[in-house]
Image (cartoon, rainbow, N blue to C red; front, side, top):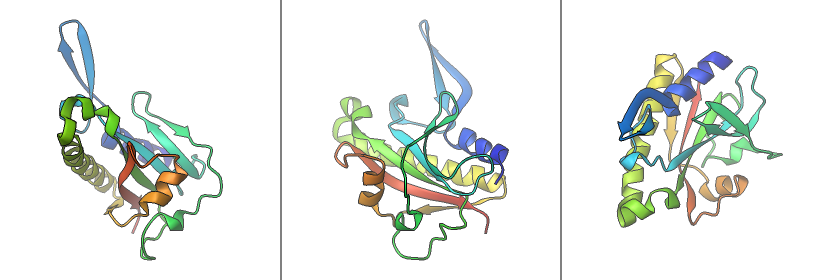
Length: 172
């Protein structure tokens, strides 16, 4: 996967859209996916394996600047991310970890915050699948992941911040 293809996938799957919403004197940006209340409680972490001009490793996607924040994590064993041995992590281009931060939408939605987030997550994952397909890559949503292993790797507490889903991208 070249850098332009990778950048296009990230931008249109998770990035900031061109549409602006104006309320009084406040201008709000929107993303290419919907979010309950516009709170966007899901953050994107990426393990990049085979993307030209990007070093292998773990990153956090920053949608407002459309950049990657490299995480200083050494000795990553990508084969430990998923349950079983059927996921080809050696030949993938990258995988996505969707992190849900409860604190981002609980004040507004209370006990409905998780349900709203799961609906949002479905939309984000589906959007990612469509963007990958449009560029002739294959994506695969993966619910069989090692949640605690990934959360420990990313220093998430597993109480307020959770990995709730994963997806992988590559060529078949």
